[in-house]
Length: 522
Image (cartoon, rainbow, N blue to C red; front, side, top):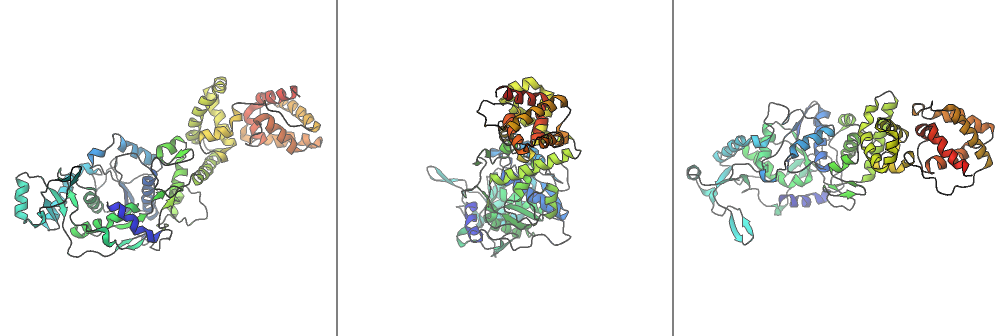
């Protein structure tokens, strides 16, 4: 296979940074494309090349094209195309032309372009750059069928070949040998690539199948040219196909686009990442990441940094910020995918979301986190849900997120950390408590009784510092001791938000109940 040879080409480049130009010349607005095949759902590697193509177009003021490569009918998955478009929209990627957006270079589904490929295959035949092959698949061994040309079809003159085709004989169209071939192939990441001697000739490759449908290589080259694509960003597994694609461009007499091959994604053991690859609680499929409530901004931020040399001092970047600084400076070789980095960025982007809410934004911005969190609450704490009701539950979950947003990764992990907001287990033995602390707690109970439910998270629990701390200072009681006591009594000693915020969310009655229950047992 061509792709298996690509890794051999890359070995000598592993780990080095690209020395090629990081951007097209100033003033050049590029046209890029993402061309998925709806034979399955979008995976992390596909999202990555789509994102890079999108960002390059946005950085240069160019255009990003979506093209659906659906000519392999046997492998098509029902509803896969709709899911691809939905996932790309979810990630924040928009295209200027595509199957759902009219443009001057359509149609944008390859299945609607069959006549275009046939016309261009016939052009190559007419120019002597391709030939009809009438060899049927030949069984060489019991379980092995070869589709090589074994009857020297390339020696047939054009008239004889056309006559056989006119009589209805089945044929494929194959690429003819080039009189002169390129020795090197320029790449924006790896520089000039020289194919290995053992890679073999590109001549004889099938361009048009016997059913009239194009192979990937013919359709890809024809579409990129006719759609005026200037830059192609794709995975390094396609590097071994580059000689064939250049052969086709030369056969047509066309100028090839600029290619930028990026390294593959690998897990921490160096194995190629697959849709079923997992790291702890997360699988690296887009569906799993969405189910774990990973924010689109966090995921695109994470994916962009996989092998890309970020020129800024911050790893936390929004999609618009990425579009302002993106270039083609990549590490040569595979990029390691680590869940720790994803969860770090998830926390940062959740914190930015919460900051926007605190600064006057609508709480609707929290709903991508709140709705999945509520579902987990319903599963784990049905008694709490029955007591609160749905309307109150939503507001309560929003308050909990705003109280501890810097630690939100996935809903289940977040709820495990903050479970004391929904259930209280105070059955363990408590440590000895200073008499001063007990006295202060009594005073605090009185303050809570008078306060009732007038405080809220909007003040971020500042009432604790404003009203309770002075009482402790009067009694010469250490705030640390009281805080430790309250955290033990109110949240089972688990880490979480500040005591003021914790008490504000629980509310007066619940705080009073938990503290009083302990005092009665002293």
